[in-house]
Length: 526
Ligand code: GLU
Image (cartoon, rainbow, N blue to C red):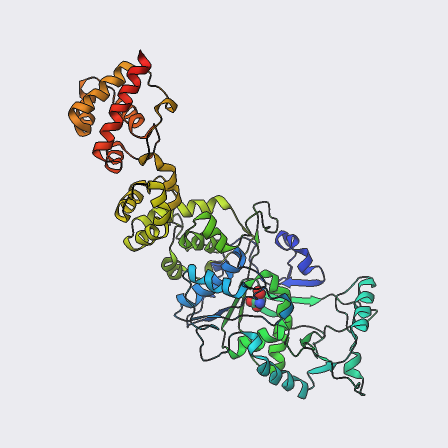
């Protein structure tokens, strides 16, 4: 098979990630094709153990939620386990509240975790800062085998090495000269890091999405340096690469689904697996999320804190998950078959397959989120349990809006009636005319005032039902009847059909409004 240098448009968006690497993929698939075009399925047939391994260095954003979701879906689709591991070894980058935000977000999204720092599990602890002794033991194993070594170089020396590597032509970020590997005498201080003795050429590895992949650092042939990355820092904490590999192995992870930004780190991970004599898990590096203009997501465009979305936008978790699930995956469909992409979490679990992942950049289109919100809001209003929780979440605010103490039952029925026209429970506040007097002066006057007055008198004498049934049969255009009544009842606001307006305003109050509107028109006509 002819190798392909993978510097596609997708990578070019993120050249900073790959600028110092030679990336070659041996997969025949094109950037946007679903990957099941090769006949062989890559979806596991045995239970998968997957993990979501965030660092608590900020609040959970869209990209991390997608990673969590795909790992969850793969585990649940195969009757496996979904593990949450907190990767907090870089103590300088920890953000207060970030770990709690991860738990709260996953809980709100209903992604149930089988093993985690909170739930425990047989492979714990699940917080890396509590596993220092385990890493120490495995680092010692590599030291004993001569596959790792202690490095006592000073900060200043390492900085000089880095700077001189940058000045090379071509520059390289492989900077270390292996001084501490070759030198025999140990210095008298005990501040050291442990470095992995990297192979000169990293092994090729298989990525289920990208195929056989060969990523090599860019060396400068005239000034030999070594990619001997640090595995234990001088505070005794492991680095990400080391802890990640040790934990994925010990926690028996079968599939690692993570963002493409980690593709360049994978050769290091595979080299570590080889050094230990372990088989690596299956890797799936999923495309990065970009804005519609193919740029990196920014705070303003798409890269929002998930819980903020819930609090400020009233978004339903089902809508958000549906939106996020389609960033790089689509449900299977037969040729020409129409399948709805509106899926709740159970349906996503059922339909999820690695064969349906796509390779192109996943573009975040906010209007799609609104579409899914509308659809899932309709579904929620038709589901008694979900409807109850919508009512509970909004009832306190609703009491203030409705002033006269409407019940939960009233709000429930109102939501059912408004469901086709609104997308959020808070949209009920656009219908406050139900609870307050109408300012008829602000309502567009009818074209034929006399006709409108006759319609209103008929309603006062015969009631709404009779008026709606009979007036059109005795020469009053249906449209005029409806418009006149809507003006009287809601000041012309669209949304609810007339019988529903009467139901929610109340028969007495509705009649009163009709009388008031008739009076108003009479005065206006004088
Ligand atoms: N701790 C890494 C992160 O913050 C995990 C990367 C991985 O999944 O290996 O995304």
